[in-house]
Every structure is written in C-alpha cells, then in structure tokens.
Image (cartoon, rainbow, N blue to C red; front, side, top):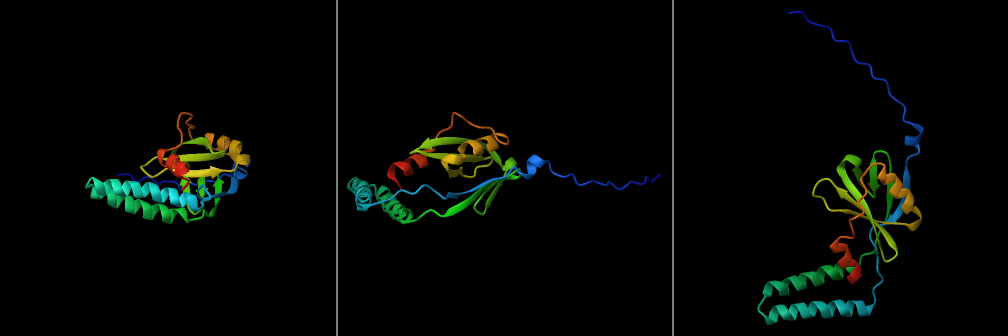
Length: 172
C-alpha cells in the first residue's frame, strides 16, 4: 500500500468587507412596555379577580378559584416591576439583546406591530423558544427593518401575539 503525503492546508485570513465592519446598529431599549398604574387600576383588577374567585366558589369549581388567586398574586407581583434599560445591537453575526445573543441561523423570521404609538419588533426563533419582543424607538424603525430584512424574512401578515394584547389591554 502506497502512503500519500498530504500537504498541509494553509488558509489565509480574509479581511472583512468594509460594509461588514460598519454594519452594526445599536441603541438602548426598555425591557418591556411600562404602563403607569394608579389606585383605580388596582381596584379594577381586584374586582375582576374577585368576581372570578366568587364564580369559582359558587359553582364548586375550586380549581378556577385557585387559578384566580394565583393569577392575582402573579399580576400584582408583575405590576410593580419597572423595565430595565437593555442594549440592543444588530451585527453581521446576529442580534444582541441585553445579555442574550441570537445568531441569524437561530432565528426564523421577524415582524413589526404598531400598538399604542409604539413599534414592537418580534423575532421568531427556529425552535420552540418564546418570541423575542423588543420595543423599538420610532427613530430607528426603518434602519432596523432594512438591516433585519437582509438576514431574515419579514412577515407582513403576523400581528401582535394574544399574550401581548392581553398585557396591553390590562396595562400590566
């Protein structure tokens, strides 16, 4: 058997294109939309959950009553949280959002929704991870859409998810 000598492969480092060096778009965004709450908001949520609790107890549906109590605890816990300011950056490698990084191959698509004079960006991962929801500043929407459209398909037909609609309606 004749052994062949394999020549070592020499790979040159290729300098990135000038467009790749400057292809970063970064700004600071809030973690989630915040709604100011007054004592009427707390009173309304309490009344709504109290009605659900009493209906559950009246008809012997104790599971519904327990869910209403758990829901009340969760809503009042989340209502007191203030959004943190996170860094949002688009690069040629992917999307940086706070401490999270989403490579382009890990994202399936994106879409925008305009609700309450805010532009909400939704990034859909390829696996069953939850959607990434980012509230964009109005000055950066066009640049973000142009940048994302170079890497991901834009879905015109998608809208705000039901959970976000409920949060916006209840102003949680």
